[in-house]
Structure formats: C-alpha cells, structure tokens
Length: 563
Image (tube, rainbow, N blue to C red; front, top):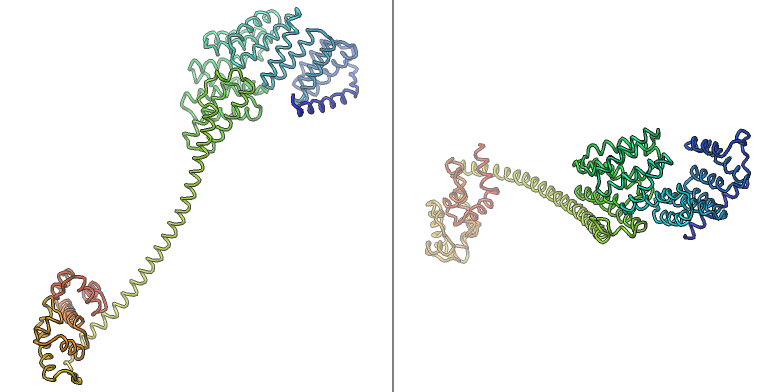
C-alpha cells in the first residue's frame, strides 16, 4: 500500500474517530427496538441515506453499548453502504479491526469478504480476489454454510471477470443449489452469473434457459429487482446468436433500471453489445455512439473488462475510414491506457485475449498517425505557401495584363494619330505638284555624274523596279554603271535616306497605295503582300511597314476598311 493511500486512510480514520467521539444519541422511539427492526428499517430506507443513517447509527450504538461484536460489524456494514466512496474503506477497515479482536473465524472471514466486495465494487479485481481468498481461509474453518457459499459466489465473480468460466460455473452451481433453499437475492444473483458463464462458454441455449428461469423465479419469489439483469443477459446472448435487433431491444429495455442502480459496469457492457449489434447491422455511426459510452465509463470509473477493449479497436477502425486523424490518435492513446489497466488487473489472462492491436502495434499506429498528421500539417503549410505564391502570380499577371491593355490602348491611340497624319500627307501629295528643291551639288562627285544617277533613280522609281527582290546597294550601283560610294552619297544627299530606308520606303508607299485603292489587296496575307512589295520575308515587310507608316499593317487595313 503506497504512502499517499496510507495518508488518506489516516486522515479519514481521524475524521471518523473524531466524529464517533461525538456521542450519537438514540432517539427515544428507537431505544427499545431490536436489531432486526433497526436493520430492516435501514434497508427499507437505504435509498434515502439521511433517514437510513439514523437506523444504521442506532444499531451501531446499541451494539457497542451491548458489546455485541456481530451486530457492531453489521452496523459498520450498514454505515459503509450509505457512505461516500472515499470514506467507505474506513468502515471496511473498522469491521476488520473489530472482527480480528473477536478472534472468531466466521466474523474475521466475513470482514475480509466485505473488504473484497468493496474492492470488487471498485472493479479492482486483484485486491478483491486477494481478500476473497483470505476470507475463504477463515470461513472454511467454520461450518457457516451461508458464508462459505458467499465466498464461493464472490470468487466465482472474480473468476468470471478474468475469464475462468468453467471454474466459475462449478462454484455457481453450488451457490444456486444452496441459496435456492436459503436466500432469494443470492439465489437470483447466482442464477444470473451462471447464465453469463454459459454465454461465455458458447452454450447460448442453456444461457437462454437460465435467463428465462431467472425471470420466472423473480416473479414467483416477488423479487423483481433482478429481472432487468436477466433481460440484459439475454440481450448479450442474442448478440452471439446473431439476433442483432432483439439484442438491441433487450439491452435497451434493461438499461434504465441498471442506470438507476448506479451499476456502471453493466451500463458499459450493455452499450458495448448494443454497439456491436449496430456494427453487425452496418449502422456504424450508431455503433460508435455506444462505444463512446464504454470509453466514457473507462475514463471516469477506470472500468474495462477484457472483452470490452474491442470497442476501442472498432473506434480506431471507424475513424481511420473517416480519415479523422485526431480521433484515431485519441482512441489509440485510450487503448494503450486500457491495456495498461488490464495488465495491472489481469496480468495472468491478458495474453489469452485476442487483440487486433498489441502494444507495439498501437505505438506504431500512434507514430503513424502523428507522422500523417504532421504530413497533413506540412501539406497545409505548403498549400498556404502555394496559395500566397499563386495569388502573387495572379496579381502580377493582372498588373501585366492591365499594363498590356493600357499599352495597347495607348498604341492604338498613337496608331490612329499616325494613320490620320498619313492620310493627310497622301491627300496633300495628291493635290499638289511635286516641288523640286534645288540642293547644293556634291563637291566630290562630278555634276554630270550626279545628274545621270538622279535620272536613273527617277526611271527606277517610275518603272517600279524597286518591287524586284534582292536589291542591294551593290546590285543597284552596278545597274546604274556607278559605284556604291557615289550612289550612297547621292541617296543620302538628295533623298535624305540610306539605301535600305530608300528601297523599303518605296515598297511600303506602293503597298499603302494598293491597300487604299484596291479592296482585293486588303484580303491578302502578310506573306502575299510581302511578295507583292518585293520583300524577302514577311517579318522584314512587317517591320518596314511599321517603321514607315507608324502602325502595323493590320491596323492600317482596319482603319482603311472603316473609311
């Protein structure tokens, strides 16, 4: 027993002793009542602890005054039943202390039996079994058949809990035979446990017979408190017989009474088998609700029978299917806690339990879920980063498109202005005769040579020989029987252009006139127009047109078509 537990016991014992120093005064109306009357009134009022305590303390005070050890123990027992869970152990130990002073094997055995029952109520099976075995050592030395069979029944309960069903059946049969003639409630309790054992052994038919007998005997003996438990047992049996709907109906009809009795263990068991039935009917969402009750009771009461651990396995599988990592992780951790508790309480049988997940697998599963959660978190961060990146890119594209749109409108405005200027220029040229502007002669070239080349250029222009392809400064100089130096100088001086600008200008002016005056040419492709004008490539034609006209060919055609 650890130090904190001893400290708690000491503090509580001090409180009890201090309270007992305050002398309880038996009410005048109870002073002449016997033990049987006080005991019966206590049990009649047990649900009303305030009123029942008067009879419990009256019985204890009377027994102490009369030094009646047996009734002192009974008084402690009754007070224990209406005490809080924390103070109950004090009265159990008071019983044991008093019984040991009597040196009576039956009384000492009975006190250990009460202590075992106390621990069984807390579902601390190891401590319960330890005290039952000590009780058996004392009681077996007596001829008190009631106590002997009570020990048998308690040991059978613990054997059932840890899975030794055959051994439990042997003990319970003896209890049924004995209590049938002696005590109603122990008889019905023994029948109920016997039916549960037959269910665990796979004898479902015999289990159903025991449950039916239990219900009929409860009615015959006018003790209906056990009927919900036999119904509960039959509901569990129905599950194993694959009567899933009947299983649900039987267990659900029994639960209200069981909850009223604060029997959290059977509430947990009932919800487990309702959940299993719904699971088998492929109504998994409903099943999960009931498995969660098993978890809730496990968390609050630390109660879990070995077979109930499957609830956690099914919850893990359900949330794995749902891809809910948080719930998966939660139930993996709950199952690890459950296995720790089961090992502590039932170390000798845990290895026999069929497990879908052993501890190593659970730890691996937990690690897998944590890794997957981290991957999802990383993915979310990446997605967030990509979202920001994509938003930024979209923003840049928007700005770029906006810039292009503005630039396009600005260009079109500029092209429109250039088009209007070009049209005015051509109209002016059409209405006015060409003015000859006299220029200073070129010093380094003979005047006659200059005049000859200028005449040849005029003939070249009027004859539209510029439409021929592959003209270069060299080939045109040769055609004029001149040299490149003279021709380049004359073009620069008298035409204010270099050779390429001169040739391209003539060609573009020609195309502009064609497009203005003949609709047919407006339907030509760029390649066809380039060939028509003598350009060696479409790109050179497009560049030359833009340079000369101040707008693309397409814009010029578009505007001409509007005129």
